[in-house]
Image 1 (tube, one colour):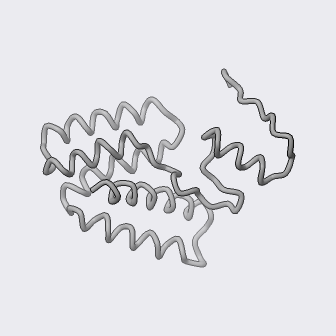
Image 2 (tube, rainbow, N blue to C red; image 1 turned 135 degrees about the vertical axis):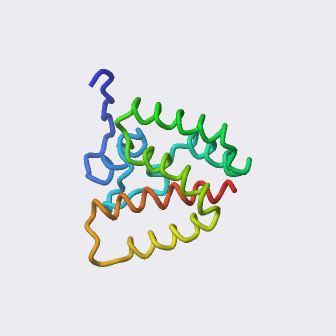
Image 3 (tube, rainbow, N blue to C red; image 1 turned 60 degrees about the vertical axis):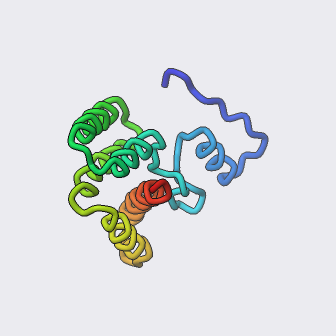
Amino acid sequence: KQNPIKYEVPRREVSDFVQFLIDEQVSDITNTGDVNEIGGIHPELTFQLVDYVKNGFNDKQKSELTKNFEVKLTQTGKNEKSIAYYHKLIDKLATKGHEFITNEASRLEKLISSDTIQMIQKRSAQRRLNILRSIKDEL
């Protein structure tokens, strides 16, 4: 890695190390294995998507937004699936409106609370739910 982050915390417990990773934005996983409340959220992308919704799903803005999200997707490897989800939301919100956020959030909450879901699927669902909540909070 080009710019390593030094771990200079006096305590050497797992929970301290996990908190260090979260603070340094290296990981969005808590010491319980869940995704924290900001995991998956990209404030800049949330703002752009909310602006698009508030402007009534303008076609010109949709084109620009799609381009911006595609560029962002190619520039980063971190949270790549989250960016792809933002990209997917452009069309979902345009075709299904605000109700999509409520319905999808409800579906994801049920999925997360399921006993049969694998941890990797649960984390993915938690990140998508965080994104939906961040958008809903701004609308």
